[in-house]
Length: 434
Image (cartoon, rainbow, N blue to C red; front, side, top):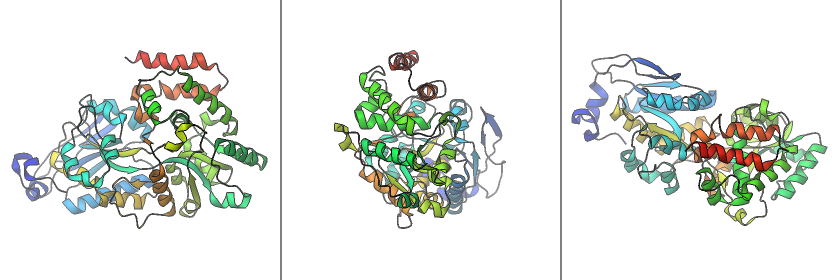
């Protein structure tokens, strides 16, 4: 839906805005993230909308460009996409938002959104939500809502964290999906005897291990405790957290050795190549597969651990979306873009180009979904409770490289460390953040 006249400067109509407004802008670099508009123009060419994007890998970058091209085709508004690698984008986001950010930028739902909204570093998009609400569930709205009750994120795509394997490999070896932790261990032992690494694993980036912590905590202690812990309402020294690390320690011998020096992409490729039997990762693992290989991938929920929380069948299913600069140079075009990406057409374009994600919009056309995407939709639909992922459900300074990324790395490096002092270090770090 396009912006109404009252949303545009001077009460201009949509056609007047899109067809004849002149603008000027320069190229600014803030903390390594560029915020730029096209050169000033007069006449019929509208000013460029700028988009800060962390979709730097080949598949998602091309998919994002397809969305941008369609928006420009519909509105005649040119879009300048400033793309930065995800880790650099996340590491520099604070400086970026405090400088001169792009009109709109890619970001994440949950606490990652709230942290910056609460600081006044993002624009309120509640008005956009009045146009897109019919496309989204209440859960998506909540993941987009900040502490003041207003929305600051427009949801776009999602994906689950699941167990992934090659169907052809399992069929050849006679493996079956494990339903319980005991069955997972039996399968892992069999894989090891067959010469396979049971669980591919790479944690060079620091955050993949958070996914393993999340699922173990969700299975052992439940969704409510998990979120309370990540929000600081429960203590890291709690015996329930200790049990998570004890369970993880027992599973680590079945994981690929040398995880701290391996990227998630390398780990995913080892599973795809048949060197590892399975991997616990988000479905972006499919970006490392050819189309034929991706059709061979199968997904299943992390096994049940025999606790009362098994019935929740909880999992991480992060929502990625778009946020608005608090002072966009092109507010009307920014609103029009956000309404577009919040709807089924734009999301359908993206997931058709990037079949490792699915649309958040409930009315998106799923008739063209691949087998991989249909499985993704199924496991998310089966989940009783959803989390956003560790570094989206807690504050960024706790989750970052100087926080839990490093602390989890310490555990992976020395899994036999004394858990009492280790968990106290984590709690002390949280407390130090104030």
